[in-house]
Image (tube, rainbow, N blue to C red):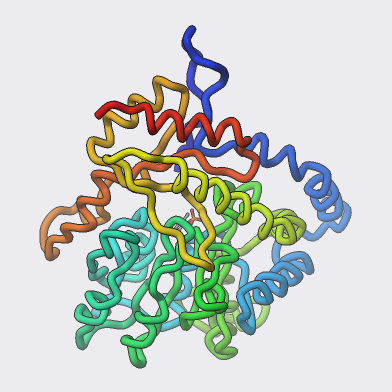
Length: 373
Ligand SMILES: *Cc1c(COP(=O)(O)O)cnc(C)c1O
């Protein structure tokens, strides 16, 4: 994931461009507690899977309302290990969407299973729960439900229709979100998180976690993240990985956790300002539910490339999440997904990060509204 943060200033530019995200500002805002956390790890001499990982796992499980959390190396590994813990592999099919960046596809293919794509709801851009239930067949081994852009997918309806088929929630964009009071990660059999630096809760490098409440399953997850070991050097499960969370990242994540709800509140405020202020017949913001957080402020635009170049001309940087359906390569073999393809052609991500100023928010709104299609 490459984020554009700067563009050269033109003579007519009113100031530095508004970036999509700004990790320099973000890191500056937490520098003191992060420095202390890092110092503590350095003094401890314990760098991988130690007391700080255990502390963070406890705090994340509390946030999600799950019995346990297990730290892993990144969000894609989290999905892969969740699939392995559920014994999913060759011959199995896993239902997922094709507009969410391809992470679930990567994990499903890594375990040798086959992704089965279902189309999305054209308004929310989340998985269509009816299509997800219709896609279930004799080989369906799991459904991966991605809470895209920080919005909660209709995971309640997917869970209700799935019967005994396990649900894996991809919560990599939904730290702190809830649906009807139940947290992202608390609905499925297992929930997967990424702490990539740009996420709503981000590490200073890679990180991930799996949450869940089935003790036996979580014990298996814990073994699979470290070679399948049941005890030191003693292999208990095949299919293990080396996918550990390190103490530095865990310590940095733990000190940020108390700040997450305020960051999410500011992200929601920015998204609300866009939905209130953007008044253009060819631009439609994505709806926001009561318990949603905002990871990305995404709108749907006709003639996206024209809007995008107009915004760049007025100093507003944008990005596209995501520009192609997962099945673009290799081609063929899948039923057409018209809403997914339409979304990939029209979604545009506007700047949104907690440290964004009101003046920057206003520039984005004015920029969109001044676009002549
Ligand atoms: C970022 C992301 C992931 C993958 O996380 P990594 O830590 O980069 O492997 C998975 N799913 C979604 C929806 C994401 O946004």
